[in-house]
Image (tube, rainbow over all chains, first blue to last red):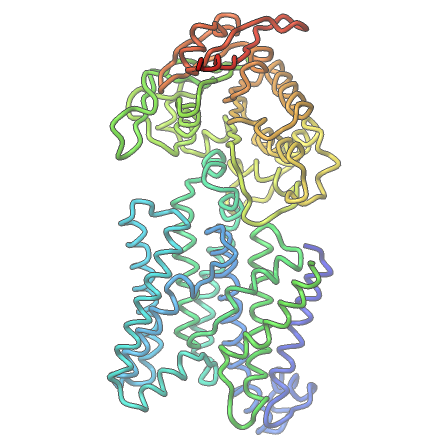
Length: 325
Length: 263
């Protein structure tokens, strides 16, 4: 990947961040944003609070969620040798939704929902691995994908059964959560998510060479001294945990894990270490931009972030596809 | 170098051995070929060495050490395997692809060293793919792709080279180029072990041929000794004659048409 492409991606991310901090129901000049971040006493207190306490946590969580989903998708597509693989296809979203919906319908405190979602996602991943293990082909990409899809379908059925018997306000709460949002982001959420993303991202970067080798197929990987089944399972677990952490922080945000790795490949990243980094950067930019649109298109209401990521991403993706043809 | 010592392999949920009592070795400086009909166990041999299937009896050794007790990366540092099929999930640049051959030598955090870069450059040079290195692998022709795969195996830097049907899908010219290259590598003290269906070419290039049939070694020796009509006819279950190649005098197999059924 060329240096100019990296600069372009970084510039796009910086621009999205600046706009996310400056725009909203109250517009704040870029210079004021800068001062609010670096020297809050130099600007009026309202602007400082809007930038630092409201928009910055949102920006951080959005960027981290995007980066995590981008990396998770890139790792899964490479390890499972399938351009349609993404964290949500593999039962993560279904499991998380079951956890969250059960918590909401039981009237659990709001703070418990992310934990329940995370627990649900982890259960789904364990179940998927168990399905693959029971089939006797536990590291086979096809079996993992099938297992994930089956677990996801099971989760959907469970959600419908829980919602069918839930009170109306719980249904609304659960639906809103399933549509994804970073509106409740706090610095605390951002910090927790940052720890997960840093650990998961670092692990994936360490395993990046193994993903390169896995992309050659089992036999070639074995000839190069890599146990393909074991490596696939390790990557699956790390990528799924990374996605689970985002689900706990921001609900379900689709499309990012699927399409961002392809956008990263379009921009010239082929080996998986640069591909993971580019996917993190593009994913962060996409979710930050989508969140900006979600809260500015129809003020004072908000659009569901999970839908806006697709609305922003699809035209961009189609444009890139066209340029390939 | 690479030794098969009474090796037996049985796949899970089957009742017969895919390989049984297979004994031979591939030594540096020699071109060794394994031939046999479909299902005779040729590919199983390679899969067993790569650790993809378990050896149930006997052992496979590299430089006298049991492969089962060696870390896989160490095996890969000594013997490179080029499998029959390799479909890249996502295309990459040729140079990056060749560089993957250094994987067994690299730690997770270590970048490539001068030794790695030299090995990559040498592999590119030996296989003559210099002008392809900036291309993407999905733009290569069948012959170019095989040469690039060979370059990846050479970059691995081991003394042993294992090929499973390296010339399937290649035209005559490219097939000859591949065989010539492997023969040259053998003459440069590599241990070349090739699985092939091309008996006539193998008879001209290989120093030693191992004929497998139903998982057992049916014949083993120099091309003249193995290329016997009665043996080959029995193994391939087809009428054939063995003649002499008019140009170089190597044994050449000619399968016959079945006589037409009389009305």
